[in-house]
Image (cartoon, rainbow over all chains, first blue to last red; front, side, top):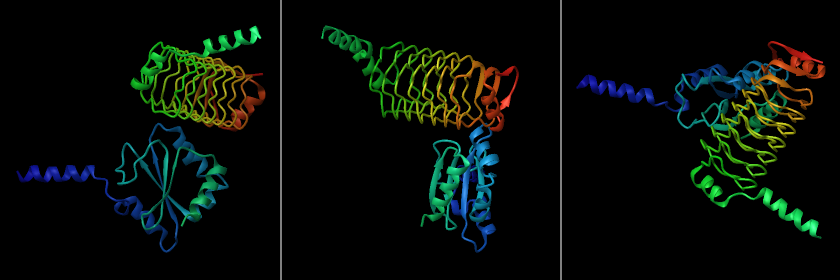
Length: 130
Length: 198
């Protein structure tokens, strides 16, 4: 009986994604930024998503985008088929990018890919959101 | 005067849908082999719908969602599908001549065997779509995102591809202009077999 109870608890805990503040990757990102006020860019991906690959390998490393991203953002990635997704961070399409401040407040959400120049514009805009 | 009257009547006849079919399409999200010419299907959710073999020429599909919907063998000739979402749907062997699909979402769509002559696909999201055996005469892909899509056994020479995203787009057994080939290579497209640049 006790074993059954224990297993049920484990199952419930496995299904429960938890808050963003309790997400390990998010916590690591916040630790990494130290006293700096960077924004966490959490991107949802899948293996068979060329748009995700485009964002990760082209746009994030674009010569105009990369320096700005390094200065003001920390990227964490979650494969929606493999990772636990935090509560309140549902998605409609892949890739979805969530922008979250240090305290765990969602500032903005972008669905789908963007080319380097418009993406950089979005990063500037999001950074300006209070 | 008589000519004007006849032209008006003829125009009305050509774009008139079957009211029963429209009712079925709106209520059931399914209407197979239906007459929906010129029908208003805009700003609605038809996800998972089945319209195969239907005539939707000149229909208004603006802003509607057709996720995983079946449009195989349909006519969407000159339909207005601006901003519509066809994510993972099938549009095989469809008549898409002159469709207005600016800003529409065709991610993962199968266009195999369809005629997209003079289709307006500007600024459309067309990631990972399949254009095998399509007719692309004067198709306007300007500003659209065709990353990861596949073009096979087709002639792209008259298609407009200015500012088109072609990252990891695959080409095989296609004919392109030299300028298109150079642009595609710059965009990191993948040239498989028998790509003719002339």
